[in-house]
Image (cartoon, rainbow, N blue to C red; front, side, top):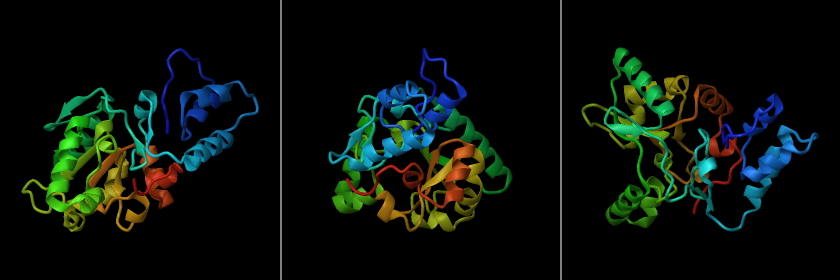
Length: 246
């Protein structure tokens, strides 16, 4: 995961490239700066190995890792319970500024293309995740709830980079049929241009641990979004981060 700019360090071009790799902890990055023979492949390999070798799930990210635009949050990797990103309001929800600006632009273009949409859910605090998950357990039972709702700390919504979109009239909202609507099809084709991916694609539940959610978008930036889509991989696979069940 990209940690982003580390305050206090003047980074060379090579060091900036290192930050673009999946990273487990800040010490690992700083140690690599001391090795003139270090490479992107070495950092990625060592980072991935540490994830794959972990036998104690879940891994809890540091605040620095949680703040990455490409932090991979799933059933095996969670956010600290007290992590709260900087947020701005957008169309009735709250998102990190980068995601808020992008979704605002995307909704404007979608509306101009006769596929209007609205934000159903954006940032969710840790406490909101607790109540949301418990509600779905009561309604559907834990097994089904775990397919469609994240346990507290494991929700991308806490990053402030995830948003659920739906129809203005409420039809097919938070339902798989949304993917067959004009809005769902438009998002699948155009969301990467605005920096978003459909996080839980069809036929990837065995990888992500979540059922198909054509309404759930994750902001990663346009270049990364297009690269992930072009790879045909899930975000977890793209960054070689262990996913699946709890």
